[in-house]
Image (cartoon, rainbow, N blue to C red; front, top):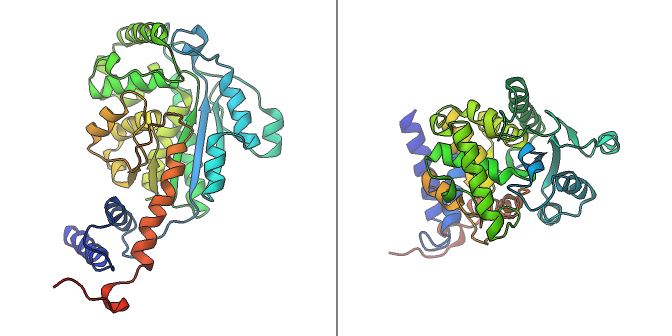
Length: 347
């Protein structure tokens, strides 16, 4: 098995190096072509029916106003914006011919009209999590449901011919959950993980860090770095749990996984604690402007494709990166070699 993998890598490298260009001249695109070829076990890989799936859910902590400047109701308002086609993720998906799916993972709102129209997948695990300053964010059965729904949605995509997927999220307060996940798994202090999220000012930032420290201590998160399900149950969000299940299923389906920013990477950290092999299928879209994301990327020893100082979420970084992945596959398949083009190679 090992020798076969080396043979495939050798064939891919030979194909890449003999295109009409200097060796290495396409930089990271050459690395992406190699990775996609290895994922698909092919020297002529394909990007098929790419999708972005946006999981949306509310967080009980957001109702306190201690970690977020925007009210919890913004989550539902942004979901409606997604459905009307007015958000950044809609713009980028339309521009790049990427299908967009929006999932109600646990928003504190009833979307009855939208459900009837079929524009929104109903997968509500609850109307937002509970306030994790006082109790576990979710009960075990709701966590299990969320993870299974993430798997189910991704499995359906794969069965319909999608082999490339990026996951986005929407949820006021979810940078706080993600910071706590990062702090626990990477064993870093909360202040090294918490960023400004939706734009907290200096005074709010101090309060946010103090609040997250209390949550960290209340749930003894220092003991949960190797207990991913317990960690999610105590301080996670339904959208983060659903994304965790989606990562696991996407890897099982051998899909190309395009990892977005801070929150999406936090969910990946959890998924990797369940199955570390998920990382093999992951291409990292961008380096988020949210504090902590660089440390996550360093921990994973990966390089993102883009550095745009974005920190919007929604899967926007993944939507911008998918055309670059397509470019890597296209040059591998369609660019002439020195031999076919009749161009002299270096001596």
